Length: 114
Length: 111
Image 1 (cartoon, each protein chain N blue to C red):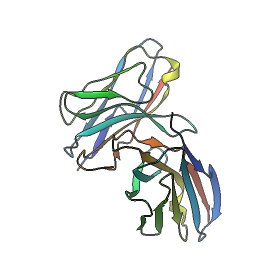
Image 2: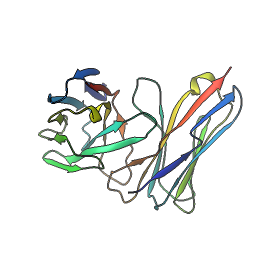
Image 3: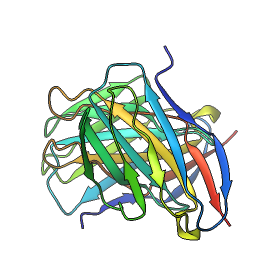
Image 4: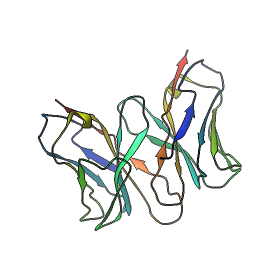
């Protein structure tokens, strides 16, 4: 059981480049989300999805796009990378049924923007 | 926006000691979660709390959902070196799955 898989694990970009961070889960979870983690801070929600075809913004959505064409996949796109987007990005998923379902996290993508 | 204050920010303890940390919020939460993050990995869920006053254990870990619904506590008994890591609390205010995370408590255990 792979759980939540994120690729790549590391990436270096130049300012202005675009890229897609991949996230896949094999637990048939309806809910998926993307967070960023910066030094000394907790995780901040970027975007989330409650099911295929449905996405919504979190706390810090600017500069990022998402789509949810399947239950399994939830890619995060950086449209034009900026140094402020240097961070560790985590994808998480959970069941949607019932209140307060705990989230399962991937191991993260470490992204540096030069 | 909503904030979670987590304390202490960091702590050094001797192996075998008990550890306490807490989170407080300006808002009422319906769910409290406690995670541990090891270096280079994603957070791993330790304990989930769903009712005010609830006390839940997971091995040497015990967490409580405060009766005011604005705070939660995590205790680790008889700490061991593998307890080292960052502990995060997270809360959900309305079942919207938009969890708010605390800034973490970094725990270091001295053997």
